[in-house]
Image 1 (tube, rainbow, N blue to C red):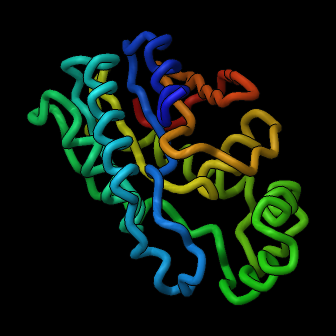
Image 2 (image 1 turned 30 degrees about the vertical axis):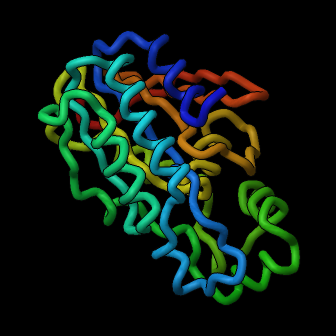
Length: 227
């Protein structure tokens, strides 16, 4: 499957009668190898990542034709580029609205130097699993469940959307891990580029879905956001 196909398949299988929210990992980026921590937010997506994001935008046009699409992203350059390329690929540019959402996406790392030390000692995936299981001190990283609850509440309460609109936020795998774990109980520590969670918000419920090569998950939660 191509990058983005899992979430596009979920979207195609969803009745777009309420508000639809996508929280996605950015497109393919350059390697972080040898890149200092303070420079990493400036790392861009690769030419292949540009193509992938544009193709995702084209596919989004086919799956959700004529919809009003709101696009937000974190401050990282790779997320901004991904959102811009998706907008370029969408066939109805008048329906695309870039929104200022980056301040709503908190940084999960509290102490960067301690976080880097733990990552170098344990490795990325082992550190992420320990974080999800509550084994990382709160002085190093935020509580994953609180982090997840905060972001879900903010996504569900995003203003200005009507029934049938789509709100897509481009973020990071570390943004998605705690949501998948807190909602489904799965400590996922790898998420493909352009994959993520789909949220269907209707009346007082929100259905959250996630799929990858190993699973297809669905759960209905109370929707305390503004619908």
